[in-house]
Image 1 (cartoon, helix red, strand yellow):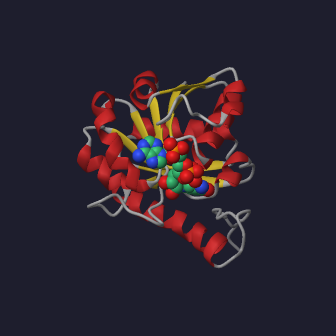
Image 2 (cartoon, rainbow, N blue to C red):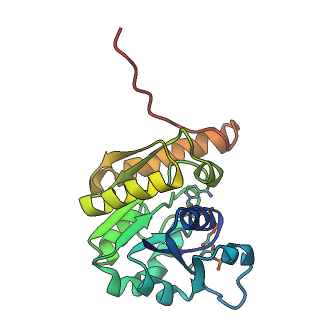
Length: 203
Ligand SMILES: NC(=O)c1ccc[n+]([C@@H]2O[C@H](COP(=O)([O-])OP(=O)(O)OC[C@H]3O[C@@H](n4cnc5c(N)ncnc54)[C@H](OP(=O)(O)O)[C@@H]3O)[C@@H](O)[C@H]2O)c1
């Protein structure tokens, strides 16, 4: 699959590395192509960098791994992406997009994109790098996008990717990310914890 990742920070570079290892073709969209520092990422044969519009034009899946308040500035680049799958992994922990509670709402309101999903926000990037045994979640109205995300979660190595519901559940899914942040960082349990679904046998 051709996957565009905007933002090559903790989440963007982790997703890029592991999806590239799984055989996907990755187009990193960055603000400064010339000053790109994460050069080791490019040693994976199937990862390349481009400008943000250049990368968006190439992928069929677009991941916006940027701070949530940066999302409105990317909207102008999503004009031609209305039929592409847009993955929002953001958690508005420190800052919100201006005028919105979260990036998912901003994307729904400011773009014509039909396949926006919330995904890969429920745990830290270190867990996403090594997700064996861990669960993740996807929400949004687009069944097509959710099917693709479930496969991409499997390709990363997650144990399960549960359907969290439609567009009306994306904010709740973001709160699950906030729960992880609370336990891991605010309550001090550490970044190696994860929140999983446990299915118990009835007595
Ligand atoms: N870190 C985690 O464990 C984690 C877990 C789950 C979800 N998330 C969410 O994932 C998102 C990214 O987190 P992160 O930890 O990867 O952040 P990060 O390491 O700070 O990386 C953010 C990236 O976004 C880029 N960026 C910032 N503003 C931009 C703009 N206006 N246009 C284009 N690119 C821009 C930065 O590029 P420059 O180098 O040009 O500044 C950088 O590559 C956040 O929304 C966060 O809530 C993070």
